[in-house]
Length: 509
Image 1 (spheres, one colour):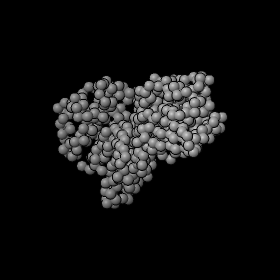
Image 2: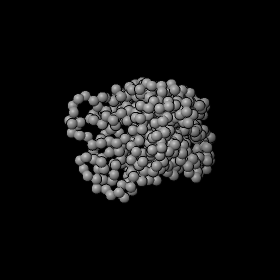
Image 3: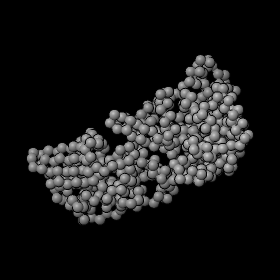
Image 4: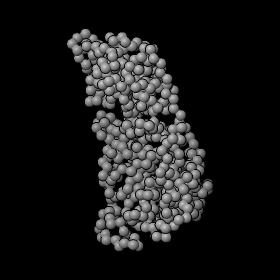
C-alpha cells in the first residue's frame, strides 16, 4: 500500500514542503530510504522501527521503500522520523490517508516512541501558511516556536501514541497558544547599563549617534580604557525589536538549534562577540552544506569584533559585502544561498601593537615599522565602511572616583528611539530603515547642506583625501546627528561633529 505524509525541510532560512512517500510491497524484509538522504536521515529507519514496536504497534515485515520528494535536494536532520513512522502506520491501514495527509509533521523519535525537538521549526511553520493544511503536529518542546506564526493551529505531542490517537480520532489535542506581548515582557533583561561607565562622555555620545543611525563604529584606545565595557552596553540603547525583526533573528537561531528550551522567541537585540581566531565559515557562514555565520546571528543586532587587527586579514575583507548590502551570499558548486546580515558592527583596537601609543602613563615601545605593519592589517576599503572612528583615552583617577549619577541606558534609548522614529517616517515605503542604509537617491534628497556646510565639506575632503564612500558616510552621520537634535537641516555644527568621528583619517592625512 502507498501512503503520503507531508513534512518540511530548510533551504537557507526558507522552507519547502517534503512529501514523505511510503510504499509497502511484497518481498523480503527491507527498509530503503531514497531522495538524497544524508547520514541522520538514513539512520531514521532504526529509530522508526524501534519506536513503532515499543509504542505497541506492529512493524510490517515486508519490503519498505520511503521516498523524500523532491528527490533532487539533499535532506538532512532528524525531523523526518515522525512523518516516516506515521506514513508507515498509514500504509498499514492503522491511520487513514485522508486524515494523515492534512497535517504537516516534524519530530525526532526516540527508541521508546517519545518525540524530541528538532531544528528549523519556525521557518517551516512560516512557509506552511501557504500550503493547504489543517495544522501542524510538532514536538511539545517546539510547539510555542511554531505557534508564533498565525494562520495554522499547532498541536503539541510528546509520544508517537498521542499522534496516532489524534489522527484516528481517539484523542483530541488542544492547539498551542502563545502570547507575544508576554514573550517580549519575559525576555531576559540586560544585566549591564551605561550608568556603570564612568567618564568617556565623548565616546558615549559617539555610541549614541551610532545607535541612532545604525552606523558602524571603531574604538581605538590603550588596554583598560573601557572599549569592551562600552561595546557590551551598546545593545542596551538600541531601539526595542519589532515582532517582525524578532521573527527574522529567531529563524536563524532555530536553523542552528540555538534557541533555549524555555525561549521560543529572541525578543531582545542580539550581541555577538566572536573570538579573533574564528574561521571564515564561522564568521560569514559556509561549510559543505552552507549554514549561517556570526554575521547572520547578529542580524538586527550588534557584532562586536574586539582586537580588530588580530583577525585574519582575509576574514576581515569578507565583511565588505554584508557591511554594504546587509546580506551575505554563500555560493557552492551544488547551491547558492543568501542569508540576512544587517547588523551594526562595533569594533575595538589598540593604537599600536603594544597598545600605549599616545598614553600619558606608559611609553610606547613600538618601532615605526611595527606600527605600519599593525595599521595595514586594516585595509582602506574596510575602514571606509566604518562610519565612526573614535579615540578612547585612559581614564584619569578623578573620573574613576566620581560618584555622581550617570545617565542610564533607558534615557539614552529614548533619544535613540525618537531619532529612529523620524527615520522610519522619512523612509516609509522604502526598504531603507535607518540613515546608515541610505542609497544615492536618499542621500541626494535628505542630506542636503547649506553653503557653509558645503565649504566645510570641501575643505575636509581636500585635506584628508576622503574617498567618495567616506564622504557619503560623513553625510549620513551628519544626518543622524541632526535627527538627534530634531533639526531638519544638516548644518556646519552637525558636520563638524561628524568630522570629529574620523580619527584614523586625521592621523593618516
